[in-house]
Structures are given as structure tokens and as C-alpha cells.
Amino acid sequence: MKVRNIFGNDGKEKEMPFLDHLEELRLTIFRCLAVFGIAFAISIPLAPFVLKMLISRLNGLVEDPSSYLQTIDVAGAFIMTIKIASWFSVLIASPFLLFFLGQFIFPGLKIIEKKAVIYSLAASGGLFVFGVLMSFSATLPLALKFMMKMNAWLNIVPKWTVSSYVAFCIQLLIGFGLAFQLPIVILVLGKLGILNSVILREKRRHIMVGLLVMAMLLTPPDVLTQIMMALPLFVLYEICIWILYSTEKKSRADADKIDEGE
Image (tube, rainbow, N blue to C red; front, top):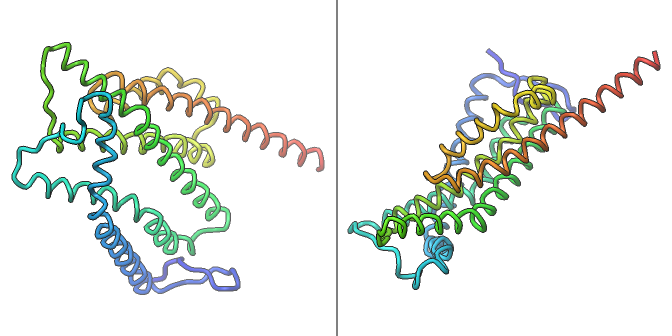
């Protein structure tokens, strides 16, 4: 059994035996695990810095943010270090993981498919970082302020644990990063001909409801945060419609030129 996997140096397709293909997969998995392990080892000493950055979002909300959070578990600090290091190591290792995965799948792709993958990965990474930064700088402080006001409205004195606080922050940051992958999905489906600008315009109302539902699932349970996620996503959705419309218009113009030439 043979699997189309690699190309020779002359650019022609070359076949690789199935067992060799499995060996390449094994090596790719091993490299990914090794990189993640190294990133995890690097992330552990950085855990206090990452936690300090998250706690900085409490500035202006409590008198002393550095001593505000508490832990009620004996092993709370250890567990929190592992959690923070795990998430941060994924962030550090991501470029290398994508590189190794690219090494594995690229040889089996056509040139146009390789370009599409490269552009998609680059745009995906940029949008993920943009979503996380937007959440950290704007959404997270507002969400925390909203939670404080809810406690005051109910006459409750908030005493947050470091575990619940970090979980809240990470859920929000990662949720925004993942949600901002939506344009990539739409544009890829448009490139494949599954979606077009007409369909996207007709489904605006349904998409708006869907974005609100997605925001509800990806963010902590407060309306303000959900709206702050849904609104920029809807703007990105409209941008995708414009991009697909422009692409379709250009394709029709190119087709007309070919027809006229014939």
C-alpha cells in the first residue's frame, strides 16, 4: 500500500511506502511532544509573571490587587502553577508545532494548497493574538468591573480565589482567541465554493443569533462580555462578505475576459 506524501526535489510527485509514512507520523508526534515539554519547562519559572499580568487587570477595582486573591487548598499554588504553565507553554510551542505539522502534510499538497495553508495559518495566528490582546486590554477589565458591580448590587463582599480568577481570565482570553478564527473558516469555505457573499448576506439574522450563542458558550456567564465578543465578530463577518464579494466580482471579470478572448 502506498500513500501520496512527499515530492521529490524535481517537484514531481513521489510515493512513500505506508510504513515509512507511519514512521514520519511517529517522528512528528515525538517532535511535538518534545517541544511542548521544553516549552512547559520554560513556562514554569514564568508562571509568577503570567499570574502578575492577570492580576494587574484588578487595578482600580480593589485596593491591593497583589494580596486580594486567596487560595483555600493546600496544594492550590502548585496546581495553579501547573495550569498557568500548561496554557503558556501551548502559546510558546504553537509556532514550532505548526512548523512540524507543516513538514508532515506539506509534501502531499499541491502548490496552490500549500499557499492557502500558509496564508490561513498566518492569518489564524494573527487573529488569535488579536483576540487575546483585545480581551486582555479591553474586555477582561470591563468583565471584572461588571462582576464587582454585581456583587455590590447584591450586597456581597467578594473574596475571590486565585483558582476561580485564573480560570475566568483564561476562559475569556482563549475564548476570544478561538472566536476570532471565524473569519478564517468563512473565507476557506468561500474559497472552496461552499459559501458565497449572497448566502452570507441572506443569513445575517441567523448568524447574529449564532454569534450570540457562541459568545455565550465561550465566555463567562455575563451579558456584557458576550456582547463584547459578538459585536466585533459580526463586524468581521461583514468584512468577510465584502472580501468574498470582491473575489467573486474579480473572478467574474476574469471569466468575461477569457470569454471575450475566445
